[in-house]
Length: 316
Ligand code: COA
Image (tube, rainbow, N blue to C red; front, side, top):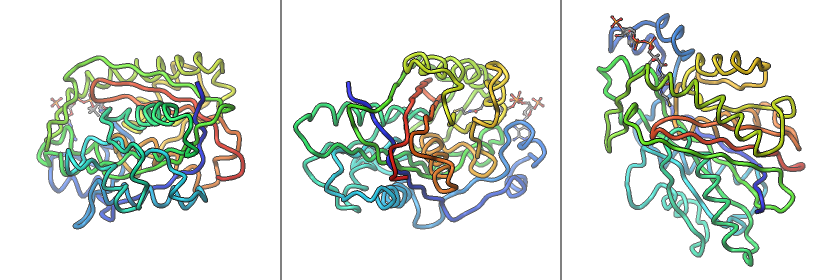
């Protein structure tokens, strides 16, 4: 089966910055507690007029601009989210309307929580592959969240962890792409996003799950790609907690410099966290043509997913 290549990424930051000190005025917590346990120093929350759809539109528009492609070249649009304002129209349909994407292409949301971007890419690959005669070989895959509207701001065990944001990627389906995915799930209530919130979580159980799922999924996707970690340029994990990533680095004896981290500025933005990290790598000139990136998601479901993707030619 043909694989995906990364063409370009976009991102959107909500306008309200919320620091740990801000939260310590709402609940009994401290900057020291949050930073030590999670690595998070601040997060962004949507302000009036911002939501999952507006962030998704902004990130998608930027990804398209960076790609240099025309709207008419997009063959499907998938948005990964657990916080869409509407079940229908999907957030992806709202993006389609705002951007003016074609109407004869598949457009849908994917719910795989913090693994949503990986699942979204896998779904997009399948959708493009199912239309072999169609010249539109590019997918718009978005991760967008407004988790702030799903949080109990009196529950210190969850409200310090999450943030809002969006990232979007333009991906190309091509026969010569080096691409691999590994997806899995185990129905479990350790973390819950009830419709409309509030988010509930057994923090210790989720931590135990994550420190197992992350290295296991990384290993599985490297195996599927017939690559070693040394041959990968970046590992972009879901940005839930710095300690989870450090645990994985230690377990694998890996080079910490390969593992991108930005939870200090964003907190956990669920489906948005991986594309936002890719966007920051691109914007800071750290994505080069031909680079191999392993993206690893894990979280609510419980669901995990890994993807090895390469950066295409000169577009980024
Ligand atoms: N500020 C201060 N104290 C807090 C707190 C906060 N924000 N949240 C919890 N506490 C307290 C608890 O009430 C408890 O107090 P007690 O000992 O008096 O009962 C104490 O800190 C320890 O709580 P515990 O839940 O055992 O802490 P922990 O070391 O497991 O750390 C997490 C909590 C949430 C940081 C940690 O479990 C974690 O990172 N889990 C994974 C969460 C995650 O990433 N979820 C998303 C995955 S996609």
